[in-house]
Every structure is written in structure tokens, then in C-alpha cells.
Amino acid sequence: MTAASQHTAETAIHPPKVELFDLEAMTNTDPKGIVRTVDEYRVEPFGLHVVRDVVDHPTIRAIESWLLPLLDLRVTDFFFYPGHERDQDFYLDVVAIEVGDRVWRTEDHYLDLVVRTGSEVEVLDTDELLAAVTAGLLDHAVAQQALHTAFATVDGLARHGYRLDRWLASLDAHPIWRRHGRQ
Image (tube, rainbow, N blue to C red):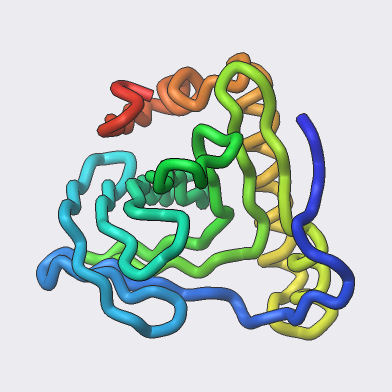
């Protein structure tokens, strides 16, 4: 495991990012309030599957995510344009997830994890989490839960050889991915 941050101390801190996932309207309202069309939603006992194009982004053409409420995680596979690929297999956001019959809601709790299958997991944005707490944008209990989620995720991935599929299967979660098969 490696620990890193993509930001500096001068990073402008923002309130927790909130997204809405409207299953009936087939939309995803992003943190900026922009409503995006969703190609696919699928609800499984362990979470919500989301597939949508990314419009007007220079490097990402689509995303496929699973919202996993019992783990406080959003797991995403980014589909990059050729030449813009990143050294990652999955990107995990630490989030609080509210499950609704029609609308699911996530609140991002700053910490992110990059999984390189079979190799490592990298924890990002601890500086953002600490800055949010210092600025009063996140209370200590929520920050503590976010850290617990990140530590449990790192531990679970390490115990399963940095294989997301194996770790999630041990928790009876079996997401199916378009690109990765049964990862």
C-alpha cells in the first residue's frame, strides 16, 4: 500500500460533494448540480450499478460504478480516451450512501483509494479530509468513520492480494463489470 495526496496545503477546500441517482428518471445529478443521463441502473442486494457517458470531459468518456452502502464505498471503473489512461484498475470513493426506492444519494467524504489489481492500493486526499474537519465542513464522527472505512478497505484488499473481486466476494458482494468480467 502507498499513501499519497494529489493536493497541497493550499488546496481550496470544498463542502462534501453530493450526488443523486434517480432510478426512475434515469439520471445522475453530479456535485455541480448538472443532470446527466444514465445508460443503466441495476439494483442488487449489495448495491446499485451505474453506467453513464461522461460528456465534455477531455480524458474520460464513460464511467461504470457500484454504490456499496454496507461498505460506504463507491467503486468506479473509468473508461479513458486512448492516450489518457491512468495506472489504476478501480477508483474507490469513501462516501455515505442513502438508499431510496427511487433516488439514491451519496455524500463524498474526501478519501479516495486507487486499486492496482494484484499489486497495491493507494490512499489519496487525506489532506482534504483534515482540511474539511478543520474548516468545520465535516464533523469528527463522520471523519472518523471515513478513516475507518479507508483502513478497513486497505486491510480487506491486502488480505485478498489486492484483488477487489476476491475481497468483495468475501463480503457476499459480486459486482459484474463490463470491462473486467466478474471483478
